[in-house]
Image (tube, rainbow, N blue to C red):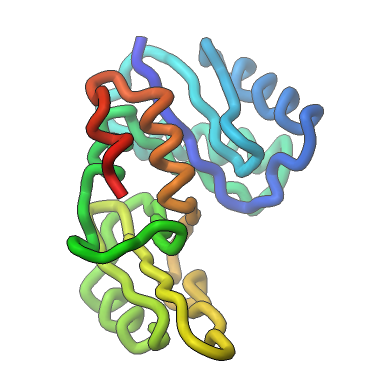
Length: 187
């Protein structure tokens, strides 16, 4: 059995313990085992037979949750190895990203056209770097009034969900199947 980590968009998906229990129940109805939720931000971990291609599994979960919870929900799935790679990737080498790094999870890598549009939408506080199906978003602190973040949904034009790097790091520490101490020392 393979472990998968699902990141749901369309929040607020989970706002109470009862909602978390309902979310677990829905995943179990799909035939998944060892279903757990992590934090209350729409992260669901489960096991199932290994799948060769992730998009059909994402589609199955998305459609089921859209039918039973909210039509705006999208599921983004990563394996523990992929999650390890996300937290090991140094998108901003040499910079202190503590508390200011976010990761945008996507179904597919962004096109060069969308990346150009994203460069135009950034602010003095925001910088974006793509690595595969992830977009690393550094939100630097600014003096005085900070500018609002760019409207990512409008710029990207594709389904996406955002997690703090800290949340992804905690998930990797808990569910990694290959890392030991290297995640703990990573910024």
